[in-house]
Image 1 (cartoon, rainbow, N blue to C red):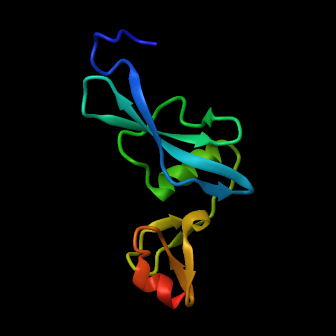
Image 2: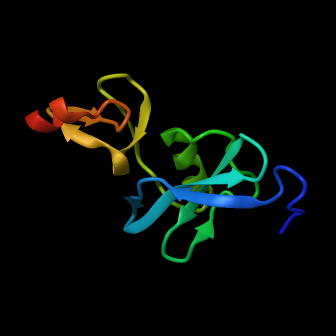
Image 3: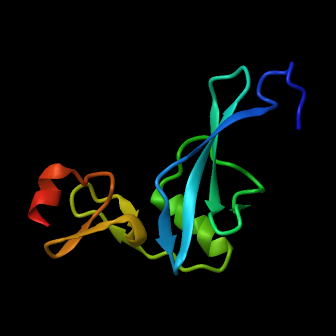
Length: 117
């Protein structure tokens, strides 16, 4: 798969980020490290069968929750989004934490909040 002598043609490492569950199915953002270049690419992968849902085009940066939800919707899944009560970013409910009367995303969740949950 690719010519190893040409930079950016061979995946030399795959890094799976924290898995999350949507509609009972586990997904992961997979970071791809390419030979001879600093750039990375990111795919959304269903863990049960290792299907890459972003096969047409990978992300150049770690996708936002809204981008993940859009890919899941393209595959017929309803990935519910909410707003982080701390920073107001759109967040996946599947990865968010319930806190008081709202949701806090992984963007803002830390030990201090965990102690009050």
